[in-house]
Amino acid sequence: MNLSKKLIVAGFATLTLALAGCSQTKDEAGSDTWSDMETKGEVVMGLDDTFAPMGFRDSSGNLVGFDVDLANEVGSRIGLKIKFQPIDWSLKETELQAGNIDLIWNGYTITPAREEKVAFSKPYLENSQIIVTMADSPVNSKADLAGKSLAVQKESSAYEAVMNSADFVDTLGQDLIQFDTNNEAFMDLEAKRVDAIVVDEVLARYYMKLRGEEKYKVLSDNFGDELYGIGMRKSDVTLLEKVNKAMDDMRADGKYDEIYAKWFATN
Image (tube, rainbow, N blue to C red):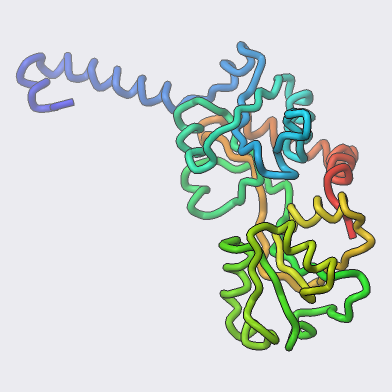
């Protein structure tokens, strides 16, 4: 709006009305949308449907996962159906602000940069870049990996985390081994062609549960921690309050632990 032109053409009174209209539009754009969700009876959750075990397609094409189960339970407690909307994960904040989704929920790491864009729920899952060995391995710490072999997935956060520890890398018996997939890394670990692997805990816990968690050992040392949260628009204060309360109640009554045990190993 060109303020000087408005003053000349329409006068001060018209300008005042115009500014009031602009203010109303801005307020509506940043309003709490809980009443709209109640009217529709649903809240739309954006996710990447390829990220096992948080949200992914099973062999029958059904959407399953830890976050999917948590979301369905939260939905039942806040009185809304969860509508799952697969999205381009790189555009998640854009989809949220455009109103195409109401929640970003799929292993969504809380970071300062993201906190500037969205409101996060309380953290609901800790994640780490963990070190996994076989249960009978003599390796029990980072120090024990001196002179040993270590593997990661190529171009992964695990690779970055290990390489950021330059002093540690220098102690290894050979260059850091890289595989195209974490599955290949696990297979070489099981075949004892590598002494240990570094992998995202969320994926590793799921893999170990499928393969038999007693076969593996997770070291107390790791390569960095992070927290997952549920993202929503900052204006949606009612939704934020209700989601936080539902998650708190689920932890208190044991439902969260029940869902966690379904998807992850616990050793």
